[in-house]
Amino acid sequence: MGIRKKTVNGQEYYYLEETIRLETPKVYSLFLGKRIPPKRTLEEKRKELLEKIYANLLDNAERRYLTKEQLIEVEKQRRRYLQRVKGLGKAKQEEKEEIDTVNFVYTTLTTEGVPVTREDADLAYRFAGKNVRGIRDENLNVALDMINGLRYLKESKKGISRGFILDLHKIIMEAYKDKNPGKFRTKQAYIYLKSHERAEEIRFRPPAPSKIEGKIAELVEWYNLNMGKLNAVELAALLHLRLYMIHPFDDGNKRMSRLLFNKAFFDSGYPMLNISKETQSYFDALIRSAEKEDEKPFVLFVAEQLIAYMRARFNKGARTAGS
Image (cartoon, rainbow, N blue to C red; front, side, top):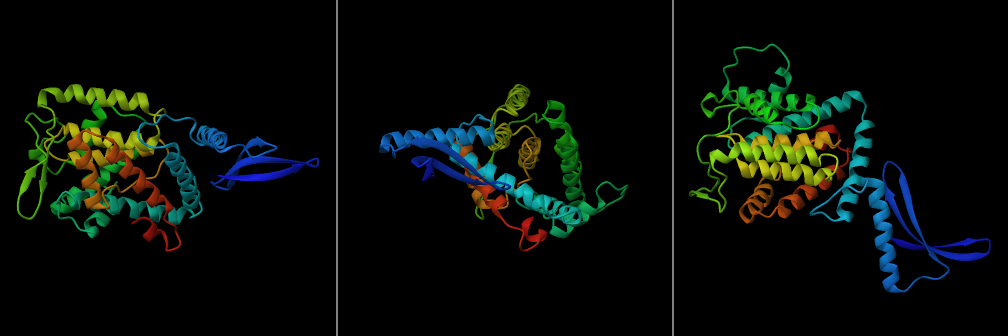
């Protein structure tokens, strides 16, 4: 923010101004008077102008952990990002959609130890929606299930339900019949950190199987009530984190968390984010929040990653932008 002097009918007046670069630059202004006010009053005016900008850009969306400055930056980058994508043209948009999807599937699966290749994910994308039968390659089948899960997610109406969560899990875990696709776990779950030497349980244990139905019902109600009220960044991050901490399935909990994370973004008009691309930082933030039962570290990580992704320019082509 800066102070600008204007002369009106021979009189000098001062204004506090902030220029926000959206689709086009937009100037927000607040009248100060004939003199620059003292420091304390000026700070109050800065807060007043910030409130004005936040209300205009984010319709006073609720927030818990992120500052208004952070959310204004997210919204600024979101609008500019969408404008750049729109300017790519249909062919480039379709290319970018393919690359984003393939990268998401590849990263999501490989961070869970599934030995798929990028070529598997790329081929699965080309097979999706076609009447393909008898694929014997297990990794290709797993990638295809993830592609189908993403498609199901994108084509769904806004909001989530218990049935939607179970159906999504059934789709993406179709190749793992022994993991009870589409059904909640009936045994206690444990979360381990794996290293080259050993696997060690983290200092958080998911709820007992008897509590899963209630936890999922609470999560579904929370999400549907807060959609359109809580800002989109925190909504997506908290949906991911809370599902992960419930760990409702025998397997596939992390990939489900990442899918629902993007479901929240799609519901709010945000682009898909390959949240686990920065694998170590992602797991560090996720485990830190789970162990301390403190949601803020993961929310901050999501905001940082989203801003960084949307700031990426398209001057190297859609293939780089989607990576």
